[in-house]
Amino acid sequence: MSKAFSKIMAINAGSSSLKWQLYSMPKEIVLAKGMVERIGLPNSIFTVKYGKGEKFEKILDIPSHELAVQMLLDELISLKIISSYEEIEGVGHRVVAGGEALKKSVVINEEVLKEIENLAELAPLHNPANAQGIKAFQKILPKITAVAVFDTAFHTTMPAKNYLYPLPKKYYEDYGARKYGAHGTSHFYVTQKAAEILGKPVEKLKLITCHIGNGASITAVKYGQSVDTSMGFTPIAGVMMGTRTGDIDPSLIPYLMEKTGISSVQEIINIFNKKSGLLGVSEISSDMRDIIAARKEGNEKALLAFNMYANRIKKYIGQYFALLNGADAVIFTAGIGENSDIVRSKILEEMDWFGLEVDESKNFPGAEGIISTLSSKVKILVIPTDEELVIARDVERLRVF
Ligand code: ADP
Image (cartoon, rainbow, N blue to C red; front, side):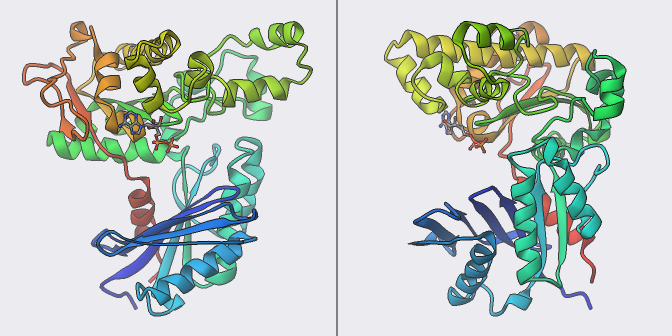
């Protein structure tokens, strides 16, 4: 029997963390949210935020994801947010890689779980952790509908001319070497929201969506579908990020190995992934707030890192204007895109030829919605992303009543 309201959990499991949000659907009300950090390490941190800004925090050893889930549900009962485990009627899991087979959100069965685990090849840091989260919930809440929502799903509409690399074709055919992209759930959410704000159906809009957080990707969205995106086979590709290089000449790998004496390709890739980007160039921090502060004090390296960062995003936006033959709007989201008026201004500086004009009186920290001038041919939007809501909506849609 279907009930008027259901409680749905949206889960983002990492190897040592579990982020969650509990929704009342279909009203889309967040009843509580929180995080378990340092799972499997001493002094795990368990937090719940609920009510009118109340916060519960506990530090204790939580050795496994399964125990984290159990503790979370018990605490929701103690805090009177739910009265029993049975009240949770569905759970949605963020899964980073869905490959080519998993093109949309699906109800998880043994076959789907196996496929998610097999796809660890494409996302070795993420998919095994996502699968761990799925299994933990299966153990504790075996009867409820569990749904997997894939970061790559939105990008499965890309045409071959955009997702293929100019490599010998057999590397794609035999090994799946292609562009998969990431942050799809976020690009999808802001696409839908932009259509709402602009008062037009997505099927009539050409959008360039910029998800700029610690990780960053730019997507060209034509009539509601992703046609190209800046991340590639893995998230290293595309624009410069907090600690990632973005696009780089692969010849640098053997060259740097020879010059530095680093003997493993994996170690070089690790440098490209974790020690480059804003952090590598500034030698200060991967956090944009630190870069902006140091730049203000006249730090040259921070200034260079900042300019390189904005420039690389600008170039992708330009590329996608060409690919889409113009666009109706450019959208900014995620930590930097949502919060930094300074970064947005720098990216959009001298793009008036493209029809982009920022209204600086609307472009302030905390701004939301349209930030372009009335005469700007292309609208500029700031939209806070909400991947968890997309997950909760998909669970509600696919839930077996
Ligand atoms: P993740 O990719 O880990 O989800 P976020 O989307 O939370 O990351 O983005 C984190 C980034 O957002 C950090 O670089 C942080 O400095 C930046 N950020 C957050 N608030 C601001 C701000 N007010 N000004 C500039 N950068 C900000």
